[in-house]
Length: 86
Image 1 (tube, rainbow, N blue to C red):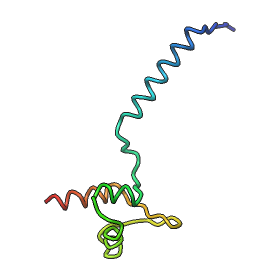
Image 2: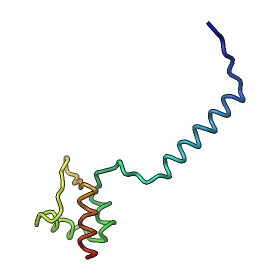
Image 3: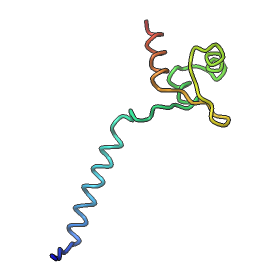
Image 4: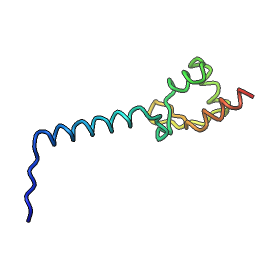
């Protein structure tokens, strides 16, 4: 059995590496977030709450309801944005 000593310098170096890894991860776009809340969708589409409700009612934008909150797949919203650009 070997014994390794950890010094304060080792811990400081570890802290610096960990912080750098966390900052790098936070600066990358969040592609894993596949569900958007209503407020995020309204911001992306630049529409009012009533317009978003109309899109839901007409079936233009698919959604899931959890409790009293609506969630939208990011892919569906981006497809809608691409369709509007054409």
